[in-house]
Length: 111
Length: 445
Image (cartoon, rainbow over all chains, first blue to last red; front, top):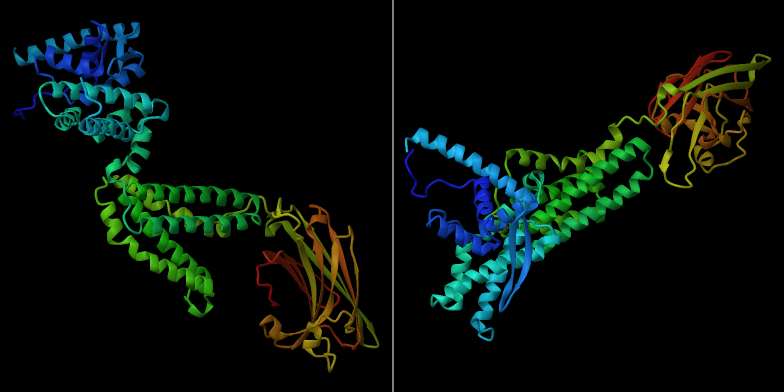
């Protein structure tokens, strides 16, 4: 299949796993997360910034992260997110699955 | 640092806030989290805006860039719908009534009139149904109420859909007007659409509907032009929904009423005895016995203080006419008409009234009997609230013709149950007969 130039698309689950992974390092807020994602992936993952909010709310709904509000001087308040114990477990399982998938995919592609 | 006194800053912040609000609105987010989610999204837009202004962009350009980088409000909103709403909601309400951005919410000309028209149609329908269900028996009442609720829910959905610029809603609104127009004409003018039978208010209503019809045209078509299709399956379901409105009207006539007595529950038997004196009939005694196996749970629905009565009548043919008595005189309700003397005997006191004997001519029944042009009828009312199922009731008509007859050709006893169905026994002098089921109109055989 020829490339459309946009690269592979992230699924909802993969995007969630990436967010969990970033949040496992420290608490972060939405805008910061999308910036980290862009920077850490060296621009390979560059999503519309708004997509982070539904993903964060889904993870919070599922009990994998927990949000808290923090007041910021001269700016609107921010909502910081941190991993819950359930989130840590889910991240560990997700990483295992991801490694297995990537290893299989690499073998198939001969890379 | 942002200069809050700069009008360009205020305008840019307003744009960012609006984008956050619209995104959340597109997401059909529950009211409990709407405000804080809007704050969170606004906070993200603000951070991006600040970052862009630090590169030297003016507030407005930075706001545009922040909004563009954030993504379209309807696309992000759709992601939020999936977080906060069930898949059923997404596939139904989310599809039928998607959020409309604030900037495109201004109603077109005629929209207000259409909504007022639909509201009036709904209110008239509600009044009509409330009035009608009072007199319905239980099963039909439940069916009519259920159909009415689905019907009104449909029209409420249509009105909401129209306000949300949905093409399907406009199609159903047009259908509502056509159904109302057709239904009203059919109800008043009859199947042959006899215009002369239409009362003035109905004619006025029809003209009012026709006057409003043009607003359904170009303006509203343009209004709903951008709506996304709802899919064939949904379309079929929606197209079928207005059927509920039609069925509300038709349902009472075809739904079997399990709580009401049926024709097979009524039993009637009549015996006649002719007393002769010097070769002529001087007295006719007819004894009618009727019995109900079961009775209606609610004979006249829930309508309070409604007197309900059946009637049982005796028709005699072959008795000579009384000469100069005129039909008009009888119709005036003369109680002392002396063609027959009649005594009524009952068991259980179920007879509430005795109809005076009356002379009837064939034309009164729209019927021609080959051997008789005149008959006499008398009868009585039977209070249904005094009847008990399984109990036989006897009514005796003891009649004495003032004009002597050599024979009574035919005696007919008719039991009329609320004009819905009845039983009829036909007999001659000194004979007996069982009643057979008859349907209205109860004309003579």
